[in-house]
Length: 195
Image (cartoon, rainbow, N blue to C red):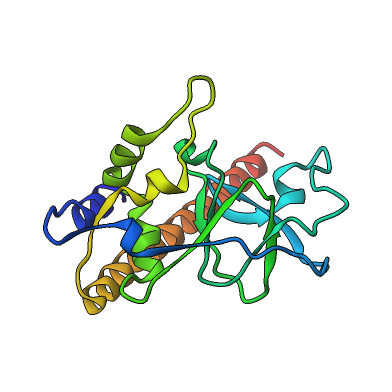
């Protein structure tokens, strides 16, 4: 999968800095709305914070300073982006994330789905590692993220690339699911042989 994504994002033509394509968001939960507290996992994207930290409650009782995330927004923890903790929020209902997260949206000439797959590319990882700061905990500030340049094809091409990768991703997920069912069936049949 990573080879396919790399091929789609390795072009060096029509390179545009992300500073021209992104807009930082910092809407706070000032009203104290009872929204789900979320975290960004490097494996699953946005998940309930209670699922991320099953053994303890890490959210503050006062969430009025937490950032509101809406459908189509990205969020990342600057100190965990090097392990892939950046995600596109695709749920219809709003949520909130810790104030330490950086939240942003794309401008009209960049599709969120296209950028989502770019963040999974080796091209992005290479550019990100050149910009990490810190000695003990490596961080990527929003300003440094914005210094990264991305190949920007037309909106129609962005849609096609996103659909293509999504279709492959869904097919791989289906194959994994079928394989898992076969493994369960195999274990069951083997256990029945020795009864």
